[in-house]
Image (cartoon, rainbow, N blue to C red; front, side, top):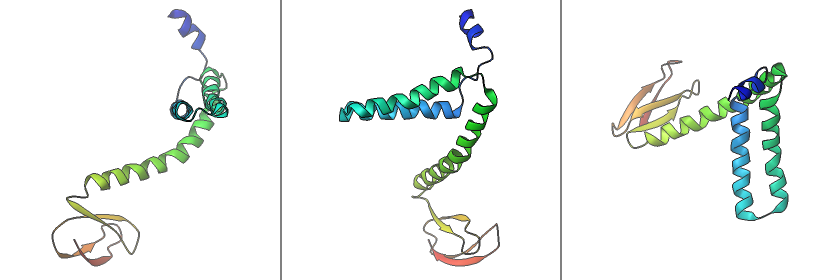
Length: 130
């Protein structure tokens, strides 16, 4: 294993963007298995090739910029999906409303009838049925 450590010294290695490239490779490989389209097999090799290029690259600054770009795009999308998943899990016990003033998501318990909801962020109040 010492030879591998020696080989990887000074190379970029793996990051979040590399993991996403591997996930994309797996998704396209599964699509190839179901559709049996030969051109899709070539497309599935592109993200894998770029993954290999990135982890073996010695240009660390460029790879960091690429990862920063990816995370700037990925994190808001991942947060949106995580929020929707949380709302789905809590939908039996809570209702979710958007504040009319600032757009903040507000969570209130179900089954309380009509209640006055005050936004903790901007202080706007509305009356909603839960």
